[in-house]
Image (tube, rainbow, N blue to C red; front, side, top):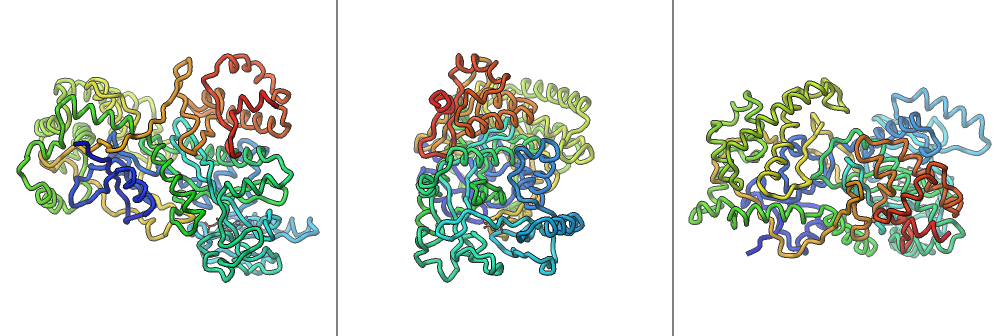
Length: 636
Ligand code: ADP
């Protein structure tokens, strides 16, 4: 009988993810009944530990990429955007309000404060936000520096006092962005999203009234006017993006250009960390970008949430978030993994998990529980990768009590049988490759630098991917796209999310150190048969063999790469300059509405190729029925 895919939720939430997955026929991971590795998706609101990235198995997915704190913490975001602006100019990086990080930047802030006070006739306002708090906590707005008081690290940001209002109420947009991969950068933005309103009329003479100045739902749902009819806004404090589109139609603006500018903000922000995020193809992450639109319809980035709220507070939430989560699951594309596992079982007659097959009469649960108790319920390790660890890290074998021969026997029982000689051969090859790489690549960690990682861990890290690939190739399994492990984190970082319950931000203290101690019989392959067919999001390939990610997954629209040039620029070393030129060019075409006239000479040169090559096209994200870029510019 086909068994279900298995999901694992940290701290029993979010409930919506559980609901969606159960509806799709998944089963929830139960610690008492399943082995540590017996899951396909682990979803958590907080960070994963380094070891969790290291020990991912080919069929497992996580809902966070490592090291995205560079955009999800307010001070890191400010620093990174400042760096991008300094490197690539402010022509494109002009979407973030001027920000200072206090206490460090106090002198700079003071200089700017005084400059603006002297230079401008009108008042200038500032907003202060603690760097590691969320949901509007600790935020205040001031005009006079005598009101600036802080006792923790804060960002102080130019307050956008001319925000666009609807019936006198301030609002911002919650844009849902799914990063399918950082290497190569592959970004999708959901067509639906939320508009979040303040619940009291905007008024600069009452800076202390948070219900008028902050648009956080966590604040406004407790406001005295939450349930009151508020002009065009209506009751409550949220709209869907669809409703906002209707509103935009009534405005005399270039709607497409607004959407494109928001799209640009997303890409440009992700570019700021794209080269420093380690490659982890098993991860797919949903970000919440908060965008404020000013009275001139210019969008501004307020912050990026790495764990956007998935609670259902109102009808708008229900109509947006359920589909959103479902589309994120589709984005994870379990089909290839299913085939991989399916073949492993069928080809090698592993019709049932090894444990049950080998010991049909044994009391499975009690045995597993017993084993878990024995190892203190700490994270056990896999048989595939720690086996490599052992072979390369003699000192670690102190922990792994099994001898090499036992490990190989163990390994054979757990995986479809491969010839041991091939495994040994593979190990030799891996050791050699790793040694060469270590020799030639002095800086193992582009983010933390040479000293951040021992050679041992670098060796270990580099050794994993090739063996799994080797097994895929030589064991007649599908070559999976989920075998790469290149985690550069050296310690778990705490990230702060705009909507995440702060208590869930503390990473688990369990450290997966007790590898190799488990008897072979206790290990079983996870159940990967899905009772429901999994929707396939097929990738196309260009003439020269580059993969083109699907243009749409559910209501997610691929926004990067958006043309052949950006595809090429992101395939190997990310060529940020080329990407920026392409963004500028596309935006320029939308500004004029006459694409062909705006083409640069370089673009004209490649136009002939583009026209001949119809296998790459993208949709313009944002409008109700997003047009294909090629069609849109042909028709203008
Ligand atoms: P939090 O993580 O606490 O939600 P945000 O940066 O999202 O912090 O700010 C909370 C709210 O404050 C935003 O939703 C927005 O309404 C308002 N806000 C934040 N920064 C600005 C700004 N620079 N100008 C105008 N309003 C802002």
